[in-house]
Length: 263
Ligand code: DGL
Image 1 (cartoon, rainbow, N blue to C red):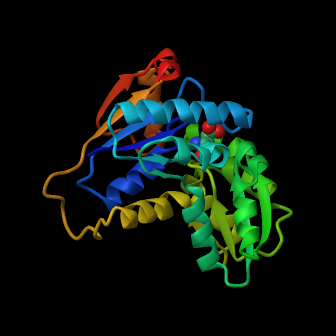
Image 2 (image 1 turned 30 degrees about the vertical axis):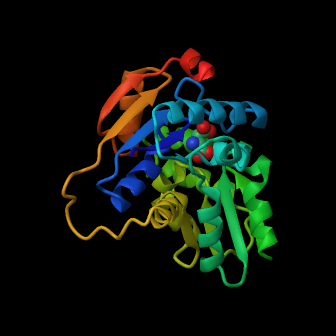
């Protein structure tokens, strides 16, 4: 059975890649809502509705489970979505919170994300409920920097220094946006080696793999899993932008917004 994965755009490909490394024989259906990206600046109710439409579309594709790869959508739509959809739904927040708890024994943790994710407060509430001291910062420009292929640039480093300037002493920093794993090198330069970076793509793939009882891959897959992509925006633009995230493997189909709204 195929697993559905969705995001506002290309960013969720970081999660898809981590899932495919963890479960190389698994087939996936990926939806990138590129006509309506970015979610990070949109009202919560709107993002929740987008997430609901995409999840229903994926159910019609007969997926056996859905990974909400987008942090903004996870923050806006979970756990409501999980209660409405008839297949298991995984978000990126719980795995990120759990990793932050493990990697920060003193409880001094930071979170960087889109404005929507920070405003929704889901990460902060869960981390604080574990007794952690949370510093949170919206970094809206990072998404654009990554999509422009500038993740390793001096400009990205300048921006990271600006966003992180007033951070307290941290033990771990949660990269709570699909695009941020690509900024790891820059963030490491700014933060130094002592702050642990929680990559929500990796920890989500670990959590989904564990729930599905997938063993740790130990060699090439007997039959490599496939991916089919559906995008609401332009297919050529998707392929082009996806290049900076590591490219797209598999067929890409156009998905009309009207089809989503009717799902
Ligand atoms: N994929 C989004 C997230 O992880 C970032 C891009 C957007 O703003 O839509 O929050």
